[in-house]
Image (cartoon, rainbow, N blue to C red):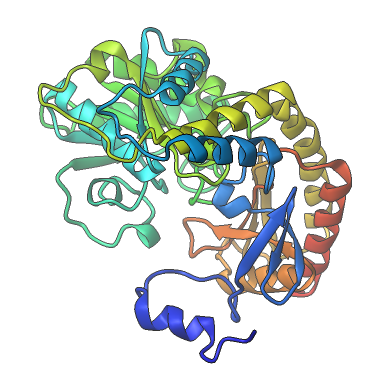
Length: 431
């Protein structure tokens, strides 16, 4: 039955103007299976964005659906005021996988809330409200996290309870260090960090950094940069928070966590996670050393963090991921996809760079022959890909001109080839 009032009109009447919608004619997704979704008009799409990197394993994964159904049939909610077996079991697994010694886990409902909690812990532990963050970064939409977000398109206010210092190094191919070798780039970024610390008033609480910047357009530093930063941080007693909301759970293929590409000085003091672990259910969290996690001197609970239903989903999803070696699949199929995208890009003047790792790829579009971002071209490719049966994302620190590609980690070689061919046609349509 057709709605008497179009859904888009109803959306605009009751939801904020700043709530972004993709496409000139936004679509309503009604169901999904595997790596595909369908809209309300019956159109089928290969999903290369997974609800912003959230559908990590597959749409309607039977193991997750069964776990959610069975848990919902027992009890849906209890809060953290009571012992919660699924929460404890998932915390045990995540603590063991984190690489952080004497790890404690606190569950939230989103990555924003996870980063907010990490900032609370760091500032309380260090008795300082000063935070180091990376240029072009994104850490969430709460009042504290927009205050440390280095991407102007996602930071709507300059008001903040924190004093933030922004450091170079997270964007390899733009900025003042772009022409340097990896070794020289890292040395220059470390020198910049030292210089920034010279401007701080007293102690700094923490550095928060995404190993690969998500909203920023899948940019990343040379491997080892955050390990080099850690040596400087340790001299000052400054904590390192690795924001793994988008890079965690094996998406990069080479590593289970993004921080492991920078592990020469050991694991971070804290890591934050969300998105993929719930495969669409609302799970976020913080892993921290026990002394940091236990530093708060006031009571706290979580009403919805650690919900029995979401924890059951997380356990089933994580089990499936590990048992089916989806990290290995991300490495193998993601490597093939990146090779295919780079071959396509070589024939399209508008593509400045293809970058990424595993099943996390970015295609940056600029005006041909220049470094000037071309958001109109990115929007046109997004539309053309959708018309061809493929859903992509957008991002980037320079006017949202990067196509973000992050399909479920169970993507097959055939689906990677199909998606690459649709992207090729979409890119060539803007020439």
